[in-house]
Amino acid sequence: MSPKRLLCACALYLCFAGVAAFAQTAAPTTAPANEPGSAATSSEAPATAPTAPAGPTSTSAAPGKAAGPAAAPMTGPVRNVVLVHGAFVDGSSWNGVVAKLQQKGYHVSSVQNPLTSLADDVAATRRVLARQDGPTILVGHSWGGVVITEVGANEPNVAGLVYVAAIAPELRESAMDLLKRAPPMPAGQAMITDPSGFLWLDRSRYHTDFAADVPENVTRVLATAQVPIASKAFSETVSQVGWKDKPSWYVLTTKDRAVSPDVQKFMADRMGAKVVPMASSHLAPVSHAAAIADVIDHAARELSRQQ
Image (tube, rainbow, N blue to C red; front, side):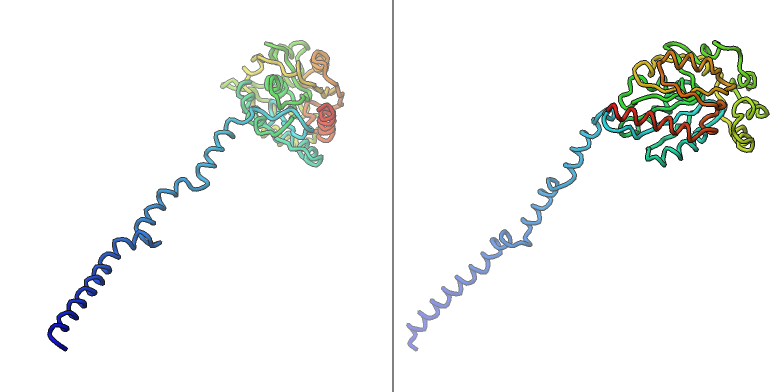
């Protein structure tokens, strides 16, 4: 090859080699932006993740639920029963009634009253009432009648009230005001006040004066486990009256030695309650559990028909 042609060939070679070298150095500056694993792609993931799914949706729903309805609407059948006990017993005094009502398909709750004051017992009952889903019957025994009288007023989910040998005061009236309408009853004379101001029922008279138709072996247990009541509670007055605007039933215990049957009749007549006489001692929820459950069931069915 002549020196001239050799010179031309070398020039062409150098030209193509330069183009190839330029292409190799230019490629890295553009390739990462187009590849899935590039830094640009990974930096977009954190930017879009917070807008992704469930977090914002669930938190936005929560405030709506928190501001939900204040009480269950008064519609549908009455299937909830809240039981409120009286003095010298606790919520277990309703056990027989609870079992019978559960067999009938009711959702039953038994309040445990502290018996330290009317306000404390009202608060305990309202906590239980607030857990009910739908129309509810409030049932009070003895002192529990004062409690349901106060609680039952202006509560949209209370469909009706059932009083069992219970005290049903008028506005600004106390339990003591009503008990004084009759001569002192034997159970009242069997109460003992301790140094802290709580009333106890003399164990030796618990069966005779409080639960004469309950087997003695049962009353011995009840007397042992009795819950005392603050004596001041009997003088505390109600500030609202549930039976004035709610249908009511009254189980009148004709053999009662704690709350006079005459006083019971006066209260039942005054409130316009449907009266169910029962030949029972004061502790009817224990001695006549099935019959008490039947009264509550009848009341619930009647109220359900009115819905």
